[in-house]
Length: 326
Ligand code: UT7
Picture (cartoon, rainbow, N blue to C red):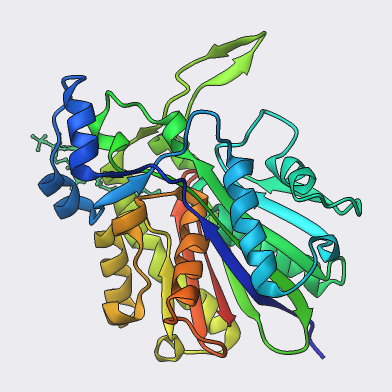
Protein backbone atom coordinates (compact mmCIF):
# COMPACT_ATOMS: atom_id res chain seq x y z
CA UNK A 1 0.00 0.00 0.00
CA UNK A 2 1.30 3.48 -0.89
CA UNK A 3 2.38 5.67 1.98
CA UNK A 4 0.97 9.17 1.37
CA UNK A 5 1.85 12.54 2.86
CA UNK A 6 -1.42 14.11 4.06
CA UNK A 7 -1.93 17.69 5.24
CA UNK A 8 -3.39 17.48 8.75
CA UNK A 9 -3.11 21.15 9.70
CA UNK A 10 -2.51 24.56 8.14
CA UNK A 11 -1.58 27.93 9.64
CA UNK A 12 -0.45 31.35 8.55
CA UNK A 13 0.66 34.69 9.91
CA UNK A 14 0.85 38.23 8.59
CA UNK A 15 2.75 40.94 10.46
CA UNK A 16 0.33 43.60 11.77
CA UNK A 17 1.60 46.57 9.73
CA UNK A 18 -0.68 46.72 6.66
CA UNK A 19 -0.12 49.21 3.87
CA UNK A 20 -2.73 49.86 1.22
CA UNK A 21 -1.54 50.98 -2.20
CA UNK A 22 -2.40 54.55 -1.21
CA UNK A 23 -0.35 54.24 2.01
CA UNK A 24 2.63 52.94 0.05
CA UNK A 25 2.20 55.55 -2.70
CA UNK A 26 2.25 58.30 -0.05
CA UNK A 27 5.49 56.90 1.44
CA UNK A 28 7.10 56.59 -1.98
CA UNK A 29 6.03 60.15 -2.90
CA UNK A 30 8.25 61.40 -0.07
CA UNK A 31 11.20 59.86 -1.98
CA UNK A 32 10.02 61.44 -5.22
CA UNK A 33 8.78 58.08 -6.55
CA UNK A 34 5.44 58.24 -8.32
CA UNK A 35 2.90 55.40 -8.33
CA UNK A 36 -0.82 55.02 -7.81
CA UNK A 37 -3.46 52.64 -6.52
CA UNK A 38 -4.95 52.60 -10.05
CA UNK A 39 -1.69 51.43 -11.68
CA UNK A 40 -0.97 48.76 -9.07
CA UNK A 41 -4.52 47.35 -9.10
CA UNK A 42 -4.82 47.35 -12.89
CA UNK A 43 -1.42 45.73 -13.58
CA UNK A 44 -1.25 43.31 -10.64
CA UNK A 45 -4.53 43.04 -8.68
CA UNK A 46 -2.63 44.00 -5.49
CA UNK A 47 -4.48 46.35 -3.10
CA UNK A 48 -2.48 45.93 0.14
CA UNK A 49 0.51 44.16 1.66
CA UNK A 50 1.96 43.61 5.15
CA UNK A 51 5.47 44.63 6.21
CA UNK A 52 7.25 43.20 9.26
CA UNK A 53 8.80 45.48 11.88
CA UNK A 54 12.59 45.89 11.52
CA UNK A 55 13.39 43.53 14.41
CA UNK A 56 11.11 40.73 13.13
CA UNK A 57 12.80 37.93 11.17
CA UNK A 58 11.51 35.18 8.88
CA UNK A 59 11.77 32.69 11.76
CA UNK A 60 9.45 34.89 13.87
CA UNK A 61 6.75 34.89 11.18
CA UNK A 62 7.37 31.15 10.63
CA UNK A 63 6.96 30.52 14.37
CA UNK A 64 3.48 32.10 14.48
CA UNK A 65 2.31 30.27 11.34
CA UNK A 66 3.78 26.96 12.59
CA UNK A 67 2.09 27.23 15.99
CA UNK A 68 -1.27 27.62 14.25
CA UNK A 69 -0.62 24.70 11.89
CA UNK A 70 0.50 22.46 14.78
CA UNK A 71 -2.58 23.45 16.79
CA UNK A 72 -4.87 22.74 13.80
CA UNK A 73 -3.17 19.36 13.36
CA UNK A 74 -3.88 18.53 17.00
CA UNK A 75 -0.36 17.25 17.61
CA UNK A 76 2.44 18.10 19.99
CA UNK A 77 5.38 20.03 18.46
CA UNK A 78 7.72 17.29 19.79
CA UNK A 79 5.99 14.81 17.45
CA UNK A 80 7.43 16.60 14.40
CA UNK A 81 10.34 14.63 12.94
CA UNK A 82 11.40 16.95 10.09
CA UNK A 83 11.26 20.72 9.54
CA UNK A 84 11.65 22.30 6.11
CA UNK A 85 11.49 26.07 5.64
CA UNK A 86 11.24 27.60 2.18
CA UNK A 87 12.66 31.11 2.24
CA UNK A 88 14.80 33.52 0.23
CA UNK A 89 15.01 35.95 3.15
CA UNK A 90 16.58 33.79 5.88
CA UNK A 91 17.43 35.20 9.30
CA UNK A 92 21.16 34.65 8.75
CA UNK A 93 23.56 33.42 6.08
CA UNK A 94 23.64 30.33 8.29
CA UNK A 95 22.40 28.43 10.22
CA UNK A 96 19.15 27.69 8.43
CA UNK A 97 15.91 29.42 9.38
CA UNK A 98 14.53 25.89 9.92
CA UNK A 99 17.08 25.21 12.67
CA UNK A 100 16.27 28.56 14.30
CA UNK A 101 12.55 27.75 14.03
CA UNK A 102 13.09 24.33 15.62
CA UNK A 103 14.63 26.03 18.65
CA UNK A 104 11.91 28.71 18.85
CA UNK A 105 9.24 26.00 18.74
CA UNK A 106 10.99 24.28 21.66
CA UNK A 107 11.47 21.07 19.67
CA UNK A 108 14.27 19.18 21.40
CA UNK A 109 13.92 15.77 19.76
CA UNK A 110 16.89 16.28 17.43
CA UNK A 111 14.81 16.11 14.24
CA UNK A 112 16.46 17.26 11.00
CA UNK A 113 15.78 20.84 9.93
CA UNK A 114 16.86 22.59 6.74
CA UNK A 115 15.91 25.36 4.33
CA UNK A 116 14.92 25.10 0.70
CA UNK A 117 15.82 27.97 -1.59
CA UNK A 118 13.72 28.11 -4.74
CA UNK A 119 12.40 31.68 -4.36
CA UNK A 120 8.67 31.87 -5.15
CA UNK A 121 8.56 28.16 -6.04
CA UNK A 122 10.08 27.35 -2.64
CA UNK A 123 6.92 26.00 -1.05
CA UNK A 124 6.11 23.52 -3.85
CA UNK A 125 9.77 22.42 -3.80
CA UNK A 126 9.72 22.00 0.01
CA UNK A 127 6.41 20.13 -0.07
CA UNK A 128 7.78 17.77 -2.72
CA UNK A 129 10.90 17.04 -0.65
CA UNK A 130 8.74 16.41 2.42
CA UNK A 131 6.45 14.12 0.42
CA UNK A 132 9.45 12.12 -0.83
CA UNK A 133 10.83 11.71 2.70
CA UNK A 134 7.45 10.57 3.98
CA UNK A 135 7.06 8.11 1.10
CA UNK A 136 10.46 6.55 1.79
CA UNK A 137 9.70 6.25 5.49
CA UNK A 138 12.45 8.72 6.47
CA UNK A 139 9.86 10.97 8.13
CA UNK A 140 6.38 10.62 9.60
CA UNK A 141 5.28 14.13 10.63
CA UNK A 142 6.77 17.05 8.75
CA UNK A 143 6.40 20.78 9.30
CA UNK A 144 6.72 22.62 5.97
CA UNK A 145 6.83 26.41 6.12
CA UNK A 146 7.12 29.24 3.61
CA UNK A 147 8.26 32.44 5.32
CA UNK A 148 9.53 35.72 3.93
CA UNK A 149 10.46 39.26 4.88
CA UNK A 150 10.81 40.51 1.30
CA UNK A 151 10.47 44.11 2.53
CA UNK A 152 14.16 43.78 3.58
CA UNK A 153 15.37 43.23 0.02
CA UNK A 154 13.13 45.71 -1.79
CA UNK A 155 14.57 48.77 -3.50
CA UNK A 156 12.11 51.50 -2.50
CA UNK A 157 13.56 53.71 -5.23
CA UNK A 158 12.41 51.19 -7.87
CA UNK A 159 8.65 51.48 -8.37
CA UNK A 160 8.61 48.59 -10.83
CA UNK A 161 9.34 46.12 -7.99
CA UNK A 162 8.75 47.66 -4.55
CA UNK A 163 4.97 47.85 -4.96
CA UNK A 164 4.68 44.13 -5.69
CA UNK A 165 5.93 42.29 -2.60
CA UNK A 166 4.94 41.76 1.04
CA UNK A 167 5.92 39.81 4.16
CA UNK A 168 4.22 36.79 5.75
CA UNK A 169 4.36 33.08 6.50
CA UNK A 170 2.29 29.97 5.94
CA UNK A 171 2.77 26.45 7.27
CA UNK A 172 1.40 22.93 6.94
CA UNK A 173 1.86 19.77 8.98
CA UNK A 174 2.11 16.63 6.83
CA UNK A 175 1.56 13.17 8.24
CA UNK A 176 2.19 9.71 6.80
CA UNK A 177 -1.10 8.04 5.93
CA UNK A 178 -2.59 5.22 3.88
CA UNK A 179 -5.28 7.71 2.80
CA UNK A 180 -4.48 9.86 -0.26
CA UNK A 181 -2.74 13.17 0.41
CA UNK A 182 -0.10 14.43 -2.01
CA UNK A 183 -0.84 12.65 -5.30
CA UNK A 184 1.90 13.95 -7.57
CA UNK A 185 4.47 16.68 -8.02
CA UNK A 186 6.30 18.25 -10.94
CA UNK A 187 9.36 20.47 -10.41
CA UNK A 188 11.53 22.37 -12.87
CA UNK A 189 14.36 24.90 -13.05
CA UNK A 190 16.11 26.71 -15.88
CA UNK A 191 19.23 28.42 -14.59
CA UNK A 192 19.80 30.23 -17.88
CA UNK A 193 17.33 32.87 -16.61
CA UNK A 194 19.15 33.68 -13.34
CA UNK A 195 19.36 37.38 -14.21
CA UNK A 196 15.66 38.13 -14.76
CA UNK A 197 14.78 37.91 -11.06
CA UNK A 198 17.57 38.03 -8.52
CA UNK A 199 19.21 39.69 -5.53
CA UNK A 200 22.74 39.73 -6.94
CA UNK A 201 24.65 40.84 -3.82
CA UNK A 202 26.65 38.52 -1.58
CA UNK A 203 28.79 38.61 1.53
CA UNK A 204 32.57 38.49 1.04
CA UNK A 205 35.37 39.30 3.44
CA UNK A 206 32.98 41.00 5.85
CA UNK A 207 31.41 43.23 3.20
CA UNK A 208 28.31 43.04 1.05
CA UNK A 209 29.52 42.89 -2.53
CA UNK A 210 27.14 43.73 -5.37
CA UNK A 211 23.60 45.02 -5.00
CA UNK A 212 21.72 43.28 -2.17
CA UNK A 213 18.30 44.47 -3.43
CA UNK A 214 15.78 42.70 -5.65
CA UNK A 215 16.08 43.17 -9.41
CA UNK A 216 13.40 41.97 -11.81
CA UNK A 217 12.69 42.13 -15.51
CA UNK A 218 8.94 41.97 -14.89
CA UNK A 219 7.90 41.36 -18.49
CA UNK A 220 10.40 38.51 -18.97
CA UNK A 221 9.20 36.86 -15.74
CA UNK A 222 5.57 37.39 -16.75
CA UNK A 223 6.08 35.74 -20.17
CA UNK A 224 7.97 32.75 -18.77
CA UNK A 225 5.41 32.27 -15.97
CA UNK A 226 2.37 32.17 -18.27
CA UNK A 227 4.26 29.83 -20.60
CA UNK A 228 5.14 27.13 -18.06
CA UNK A 229 2.50 27.02 -15.31
CA UNK A 230 -0.30 25.25 -17.17
CA UNK A 231 2.15 22.68 -18.54
CA UNK A 232 3.46 21.84 -15.05
CA UNK A 233 -0.13 21.58 -13.80
CA UNK A 234 -1.09 19.22 -16.64
CA UNK A 235 2.00 17.09 -16.03
CA UNK A 236 1.09 16.73 -12.33
CA UNK A 237 -2.50 15.82 -13.26
CA UNK A 238 -1.32 13.26 -15.81
CA UNK A 239 1.00 11.59 -13.26
CA UNK A 240 -1.99 11.19 -10.92
CA UNK A 241 -4.32 10.01 -13.69
CA UNK A 242 -6.63 13.00 -13.20
CA UNK A 243 -8.17 15.64 -15.51
CA UNK A 244 -8.34 19.41 -15.24
CA UNK A 245 -12.07 19.01 -14.45
CA UNK A 246 -11.16 16.97 -11.33
CA UNK A 247 -9.55 20.02 -9.70
CA UNK A 248 -11.69 21.61 -6.98
CA UNK A 249 -9.25 24.41 -6.18
CA UNK A 250 -6.28 25.95 -7.93
CA UNK A 251 -3.98 27.67 -5.42
CA UNK A 252 -1.29 29.39 -7.49
CA UNK A 253 1.64 31.49 -6.37
CA UNK A 254 0.13 34.92 -5.74
CA UNK A 255 2.26 37.29 -7.82
CA UNK A 256 -0.08 38.90 -10.29
CA UNK A 257 -3.81 38.33 -10.84
CA UNK A 258 -3.25 38.47 -14.61
CA UNK A 259 -0.85 35.48 -14.46
CA UNK A 260 -3.38 33.61 -12.30
CA UNK A 261 -6.24 34.38 -14.70
CA UNK A 262 -4.18 33.30 -17.71
CA UNK A 263 -3.25 29.95 -16.10
CA UNK A 264 -6.82 29.29 -14.95
CA UNK A 265 -8.08 30.03 -18.48
CA UNK A 266 -5.57 27.63 -20.03
CA UNK A 267 -6.61 24.92 -17.56
CA UNK A 268 -10.30 25.64 -18.30
CA UNK A 269 -10.93 26.48 -14.64
CA UNK A 270 -13.21 29.38 -13.76
CA UNK A 271 -11.82 32.00 -11.39
CA UNK A 272 -14.27 30.91 -8.69
CA UNK A 273 -12.12 27.76 -8.41
CA UNK A 274 -9.00 29.83 -7.73
CA UNK A 275 -8.05 30.93 -4.20
CA UNK A 276 -7.00 34.58 -4.49
CA UNK A 277 -5.12 36.44 -1.76
CA UNK A 278 -2.76 38.53 -3.90
CA UNK A 279 -5.11 41.50 -3.47
CA UNK A 280 -4.57 41.54 0.31
CA UNK A 281 -1.04 40.07 0.67
CA UNK A 282 0.86 41.14 -2.45
CA UNK A 283 3.56 38.71 -3.56
CA UNK A 284 4.99 37.03 -0.43
CA UNK A 285 7.26 34.70 -2.46
CA UNK A 286 7.62 31.27 -0.80
CA UNK A 287 4.92 32.19 1.73
CA UNK A 288 2.21 32.99 -0.80
CA UNK A 289 0.91 29.47 -1.50
CA UNK A 290 0.68 28.29 2.14
CA UNK A 291 -0.85 31.67 3.10
CA UNK A 292 -3.50 31.22 0.38
CA UNK A 293 -4.03 27.56 1.31
CA UNK A 294 -4.59 28.43 4.98
CA UNK A 295 -6.92 31.25 3.95
CA UNK A 296 -8.87 28.78 1.80
CA UNK A 297 -9.10 26.22 4.60
CA UNK A 298 -10.04 28.66 7.36
CA UNK A 299 -12.59 30.52 5.21
CA UNK A 300 -14.33 27.18 4.56
CA UNK A 301 -13.64 27.27 0.80
CA UNK A 302 -11.21 24.36 0.76
CA UNK A 303 -12.81 21.28 2.32
CA UNK A 304 -11.58 17.81 3.36
CA UNK A 305 -11.55 15.35 0.46
CA UNK A 306 -11.23 18.03 -2.22
CA UNK A 307 -8.57 17.96 -4.93
CA UNK A 308 -6.21 20.93 -4.80
CA UNK A 309 -3.58 21.98 -7.32
CA UNK A 310 -0.74 24.16 -6.01
CA UNK A 311 1.67 25.82 -8.40
CA UNK A 312 4.66 28.04 -7.95
CA UNK A 313 6.92 30.07 -10.21
CA UNK A 314 9.83 32.38 -9.52
CA UNK A 315 13.50 33.21 -9.51
CA UNK A 316 15.96 30.64 -10.73
CA UNK A 317 13.97 30.41 -13.01
CA UNK A 318 12.00 27.76 -11.06
CA UNK A 319 8.49 26.42 -11.35
CA UNK A 320 6.41 23.45 -10.33
CA UNK A 321 3.06 22.03 -9.25
CA UNK A 322 1.82 19.76 -6.47
CA UNK A 323 -1.51 17.95 -6.72
CA UNK A 324 -3.11 16.76 -3.48
CA UNK A 325 -6.23 15.57 -1.73
CA UNK A 326 -7.11 17.55 1.36
O1 UT7 B 1 7.16 36.10 -7.77
C1 UT7 B 1 7.85 35.80 -8.93
C2 UT7 B 1 7.01 36.06 -10.04
N1 UT7 B 1 6.98 37.48 -10.35
C3 UT7 B 1 6.06 37.85 -11.18
O2 UT7 B 1 5.26 37.05 -11.57
C4 UT7 B 1 6.07 39.26 -11.74
C5 UT7 B 1 5.77 39.18 -13.20
N2 UT7 B 1 5.64 40.47 -13.85
C6 UT7 B 1 4.59 41.28 -13.64
O3 UT7 B 1 3.74 40.99 -12.84
C7 UT7 B 1 4.46 42.53 -14.47
O4 UT7 B 1 5.40 42.49 -15.53
C8 UT7 B 1 4.65 43.83 -13.66
C9 UT7 B 1 3.47 44.01 -12.72
C10 UT7 B 1 5.94 43.77 -12.88
C11 UT7 B 1 4.69 45.03 -14.60
O5 UT7 B 1 3.51 45.09 -15.36
P1 UT7 B 1 3.60 45.42 -16.92
O6 UT7 B 1 2.23 45.44 -17.42
O7 UT7 B 1 4.55 44.43 -17.52
O8 UT7 B 1 4.18 46.87 -16.92
P2 UT7 B 1 5.50 47.43 -17.63
O9 UT7 B 1 6.71 46.91 -16.95
O10 UT7 B 1 5.35 47.19 -19.11
O11 UT7 B 1 5.38 48.98 -17.37
C12 UT7 B 1 4.34 49.75 -18.01
C13 UT7 B 1 4.51 51.19 -17.59
C14 UT7 B 1 5.94 51.73 -17.76
O12 UT7 B 1 5.85 53.07 -18.20
P3 UT7 B 1 6.07 53.43 -19.74
O13 UT7 B 1 7.46 52.97 -20.07
O14 UT7 B 1 5.02 52.67 -20.49
O15 UT7 B 1 5.89 54.92 -19.76
C15 UT7 B 1 6.49 51.72 -16.36
O16 UT7 B 1 7.48 52.69 -16.16
O17 UT7 B 1 4.21 51.33 -16.19
C16 UT7 B 1 5.26 52.04 -15.54
N3 UT7 B 1 5.36 51.60 -14.17
C17 UT7 B 1 4.65 52.12 -13.15
N4 UT7 B 1 3.80 53.16 -13.10
C18 UT7 B 1 3.26 53.45 -11.91
C19 UT7 B 1 6.08 50.55 -13.69
N5 UT7 B 1 5.86 50.42 -12.36
C20 UT7 B 1 4.99 51.38 -12.01
C21 UT7 B 1 4.39 51.75 -10.79
N6 UT7 B 1 3.53 52.79 -10.79
N7 UT7 B 1 4.63 51.08 -9.63
